[in-house]
Length: 250
Ligand code: IPE
Ligand code: IPE
Ligand code: MG
Image 1: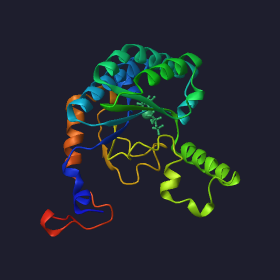
Image 2: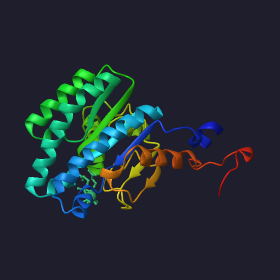
Image 3: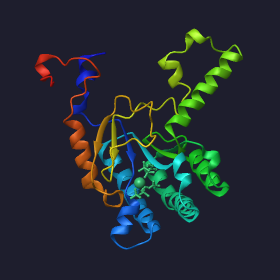
């Protein structure tokens, strides 16, 4: 690994991943139903997609619905699924205009048929764009992703396609949902919680973590810019030591 890649955080991240949290609290603070918080959160998604373009960030992964979120009350889940479909309908032109490719990671098959259809259609129509990628983690769980990869590897070994001695980090990563996407450089969590909540457990190994008390519906361009600034001031060492001249921290 080169000294440059050790020091790398003075430049902008290539891939930002976000745990969009705090919609319910935002609504409660205003005496509104939780659904209103999710609607306001959709505005922040728009703002952050635009901010990524302005900051030259190529990959944005948004944790939109976890495998655990199916435990929420039926009306909330239905509301979120409806919001997702409407969001795709409204935002599809923006993806075309900015040449952004939509991708999904997670158990797409768990989502209501109409939502699946809409997402699949937009993914197909934007598949050739390469100005950036918007990745939605939907019915996503980090452990599910890792267990699914392990099962696929076991099947390939059984079928004689893979030898157990071939299985290393690189081969394992190739069996995850989106193997061509680089690991996130920066992971942002809003609303002050200090946990991963089963998000990208493999891929976040060396991400810089940034948490903010700002609730997701209030997280707009200035809050995003603050996260990017914080990232740029970090010194990324990946277990190595920075050259003296670059001022290695402790
Ligand atoms: C994040 O906001 C949205 C989803 C998880 C879908 P929450 O709904 O978790 O908001 P809080 O954590 O209850 O405030
Ligand atoms: C994480 O938020 C999942 C998403 C943002 C989609 P949660 O609100 O579901 O996480 P917990 O329950 O606080 O861990
Ligand atoms: Mg939450």
